[in-house]
Length: 193
Image (cartoon, rainbow, N blue to C red; front, side, top):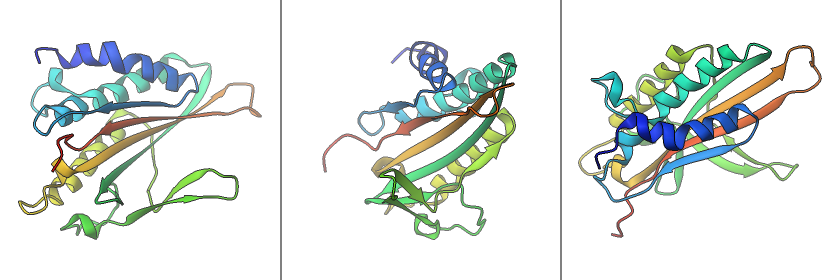
């Protein structure tokens, strides 16, 4: 309960981010009862810099590392998915007229001919820097809040997944590209109804 956000990132997030930067897929998720601080741990508070959660800290770290590792060309993409009542919704959909969760496009899970699972209708946004990535996080969080009503409290009964896709290519080796994904998941409350 007294653990600082920076310590959570240092002890959990940093290693997973390093693995993703090195070409391995990774997932970080928060599990627990409603009101236990999962969303705060994942996204953090907006008032103080030290209150930033795992997603903003991961984005900051990833962009710092990509600048430091200048022997590679890096391309970063983000997506944000909410799963509610077994339906997926794109939290980064561009329509500014969203009034309910159901106004967002439904994301559909399908298997392609190569036996890979694809999320159809989930927008993918290329981000050039940390600020652009944080903007998309803010848009997704705003859409999540807009979708909440007292009757339909999506924050406690939905799962949210922020996805960071990392493409890397060593300069001089144009025929070889590495792709990895980092999923940061805010699970719904674990109590049974």
